[in-house]
Image (cartoon, rainbow, N blue to C red; front, side, top):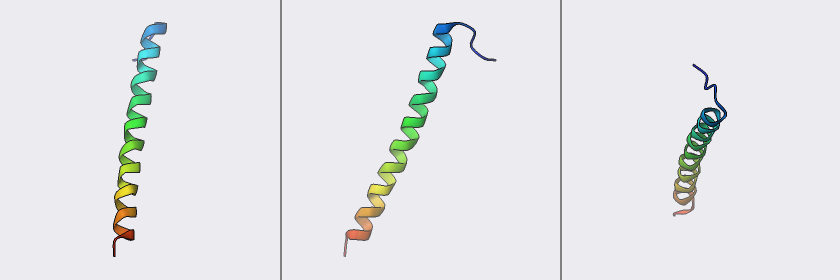
Length: 41
């Protein structure tokens, strides 16, 4: 069910944005690990 109040919509938007940012952070951390492994002789 979609939020109906402005505050509820804002809270849902922030929750979604946090989830996206956290997913991106995990991806970037993974890339950093791969880059370290590729550079290490």
